[in-house]
Image 1 (cartoon, rainbow, N blue to C red):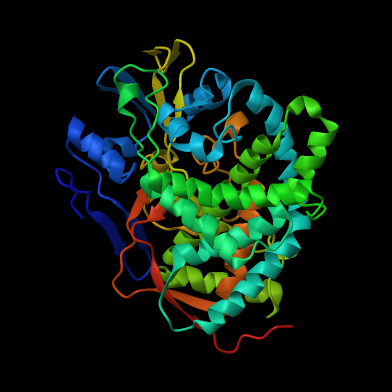
Image 2: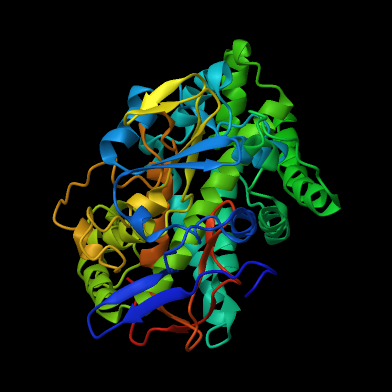
Length: 473
């Protein structure tokens, strides 16, 4: 698909009898010009990296009047994200401007005192110790969802939207403590999808010298998308405040904390922002991970066979539960390898608060530091067969450098919902793959593109069929 003066890179995908090179844009060999950078960023944020970027190191670039450092070495990533994290805690102006109208001062883009106050609050609510209490909800929602799949067996549908519907319902019941309903869930999904399509990931004002970038104009499409999301979240918050919420939900915990800690200043808008942030992060990232996992498994049947064999050994025909996930090592390895190849948020840009130095290169206040899981997860000098789908690399207690593999970020700003999301993905994968064979449309190649999160361009058309001979205890 050509966009005027810009043509996206070809997609590379290869398969053999025992290997699968997962789809990715062909690296560039020539530096893009400014027009290509502008149009390329509008199309996808991962499509124009140079061949040399897929090795660990440090690259320095200048776009108009602004320095951009691509930090792609483990020790330098540690310096930026941990050692000097207070100087590099700010998200890029592009990301802040792109998300502020949707998430306000929610945890994902907040900073300073707001972030310091709310981080422990949100982290406690989605802490790994709470995962078992939410596990039954994950099981029940996924099993109900599976019944819907049984009815559409053999009929083509789009998998990204289906996975978003599943994870939105899980996060709705755990965050909001109630069945959101298919209509409201779909409204949030459609709103967020429309919002992603309407944002501009390149803020020209920033590169022309404005440290905060230029304010973004919000047209009718974007305003409508935001309203679709906010109206659902606000209704749930107001229902809880009026006494109509369910005890033990994440929103209920937020409201109770507000009552105990008035110094946090969690007014209705702040509650909405945090609930919206948890909802967006919770459903979107897991949905895209599951979509890519099913695509990779469909193209690596030898891995799918090992996964099914493991589920049968652990569960003996019954439906997997949250208590099984520690034993489902192949399922976990599939999710981790999918997160390596397709980190839901593939770029983690940071803005320098003050002058600094990274890897011997002077950094001015306001300069942009780019940490890119997309790049270092595929660094050819750090990963064997870096572009291949090889879940076995995460088996047998494999230890991976946390500054080489960090799909949920790393350091103080690591995603507090990491354990929740990872457990949810493993369980959903196990329940669905035990019962169904998922197959992409014949000959379809999924092109990864990123505007906010990493999705297949144009979605992923699939059909499902129930496996023969499966029984339930």
